[in-house]
Image (cartoon, rainbow, N blue to C red; front, side, top):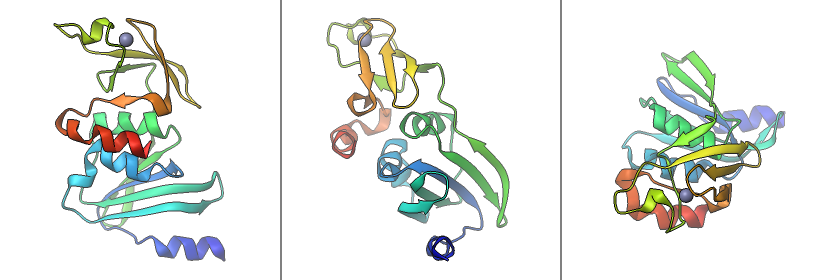
Length: 169
Ligand SMILES: [Zn+2]
């Protein structure tokens, strides 16, 4: 019965994207990082929703918006178990699990000031994924290792939000 009630609390959408099985507590960080918090569409967020599979989870539903490849990669870094469903006319037309790439390109900054990725003619960052969960990645240039909570995302258009995003993490 409890599961039924929980389901009803989160409204269905007619068309758009459902990001499900987000690690509990990461929904707001994902919205902020992907820039989805700036869309004008209706967004429904469930935080700490009961889940059979993972005990509790977060869920995001966004009307009339489909994610791009960068946004899906950002989500895979924060919540490697997340699933993304595309909804058309109330039906799931496609459902996929996000996939964390072996090498993460451009999405993350290396905070090591002497790293070649921060040189005067900066080159794009590349991080090798050493462990998926809990996340551990390594800069391929200076070999510095980062855990999830140490990561600083590049999010080009939204540099001013990095401070906020770090607090949320
Ligand atoms: Zn580096």
